[in-house]
Image (cartoon, rainbow, N blue to C red; front, side, top):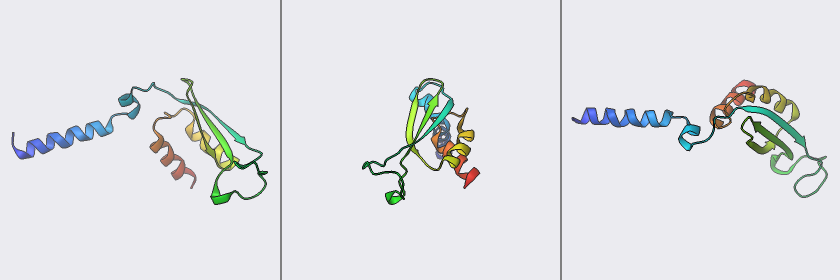
Length: 110
């Protein structure tokens, strides 16, 4: 084997590994996002009423992302209108492809 063939084999294998689905590589079940719930909290983390601008642009809203396999993700939410628009993009998608989902939402609405 010459040097050129060696490097072609190495880079080809690296490309194949990087393109493998992360969920398959980790042994996670195939899942689809089925529902997104949005909760507006009445108080912030310190117990103060949620009527003023939060410190450091932190959201006090909670978002639950549910899948058909029973997995539930919990995170912070933004404005209700933005959450409604973005949820349309997320329903039916693979929840483990977070980079792709983020790019899809960012490019579609911002």
